[in-house]
Length: 239
Image (cartoon, rainbow, N blue to C red; front, side, top):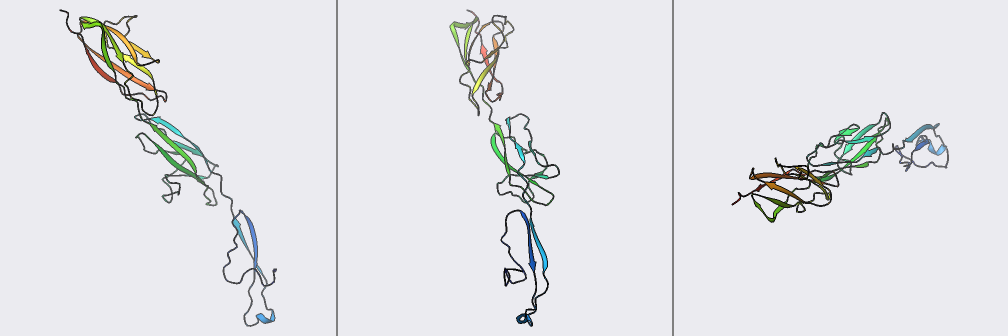
């Protein structure tokens, strides 16, 4: 029972300990009427056990293109621990958004979403969070212009198409996919052309028909595919 006089007198004692471990203390009581005579009781043992926090779980970031199936976020921890998902670094709301190894965020719009995932062990100790992100990419937008070459467009002619006016989403467009919808297409003047160099292509049209519905779809370096853009090409009758 050292030091003499004890560490503290009172019915509650703040040990000041914060590190994990097992701490043992000895507590006595002294009769105030006989305290001057040294009448101190035998000691009782009281322990303070501070559990170590579990390690943060492992999280898997996910990416997707807007308009496609959005994957669930995933995390893993020690077997038997509870995985809890939050959308705030302050770990709110209390109890989390969801408990489980995978979490369906419900997000569909293009943006970067950050979530925070913890694991809680059998001692109800909750780990520090791991950041897990969901990046939903904005889609590219297909568009093109065209012009006739060598006075074409009267009865027949070659059209020059420019798909470079298509707009990037979050990525950079690297593929232009053309469908000229031409019933007169041949092996050397094909209907379907995929261009990975630039957005420029040509196609020879003849009539009939006099209207062609040309389609362009673009894809970017993130693997996101645009909606298909369609424009009408009109062949004027020969004079």
